[in-house]
Image (cartoon, rainbow, N blue to C red; front, side):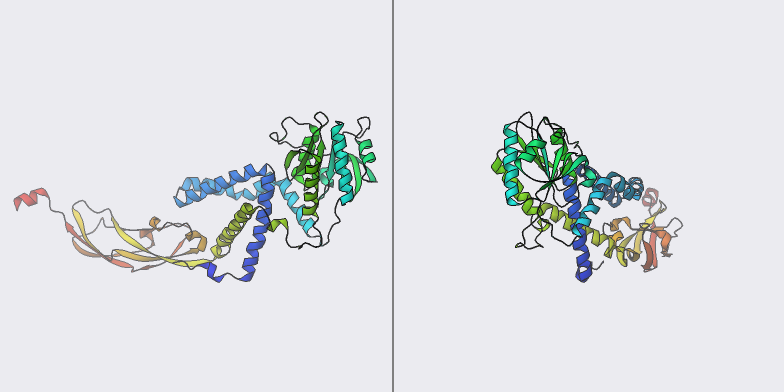
Length: 395
């Protein structure tokens, strides 16, 4: 039997699991917000097929999947290069041990909401980016620097249809407009972009790559939409827009009276957290205690092969043997003991009782394991001649 490694978990191992769970949770949330979710599902399906193939001893299928997982890391880098870049940027942001000043003050937020409402009534298109914690520079091209305080006249003059920069985006940071006429990356999420224009595509594109809040005013319909965390939705009135803006600022720049450690990571999205914790524990179980070498014993029944047709086995003593194998602990997790077979070739058996030696060549077992011991190493076989019908009638 394999001892239970959970009884010997140390504090560093627990911290190891917690840290990996946080990384996995971050990856799961980002995958949910991007097209990477479909790729992750495909990888999980292939991994499940590989595990089933190993358990059922489908050797060719397992061999093909082993070749696939051999280049798995390279595939991850190629497929998720943008997501990995975002991960490194997020780690850099977390590493800054300072509290950022909120992007907008309460009075500036009110001015912004009222101005957006006026633009919507007048059917003037607009795209406003409220910066969060993530850096935006890598995703934004063009634009004209402007260090001007957010005000209704300034915003309306920028988005005036006769202004050269009205088609671009305005970047807001710490109550100021830092840049206008900027170009944002376009999203390719056709499902969310049905029946909307280029401004909405740009807003969603930046929201997929960063934690910014993008406010869009539709020139054709006079509606207001917001894009954040990879989601685009329309707001019904300025009260809802104000609530969205307040919630965004509160989540990205919590007040000093709040517990700094009570991050949204620990307050929401419980399903993703549970999956991340389960995966972290599973990875730890496979790669930490699973890499340790253990000895495991199995009781295996003895069978005979190549018995002459005129002979019959009367007795095998002993009928079972105890085989001890050595290997990494993870090799035994999904191990099917029925794969172990002890077969004795009795093609040359004579009448009466005969002793056979059990060696490694008589035992069939998975190649990743090493046979350590067989007890007993010999067995006695008793056979007798099968009476035929002629002998019975003659008697």
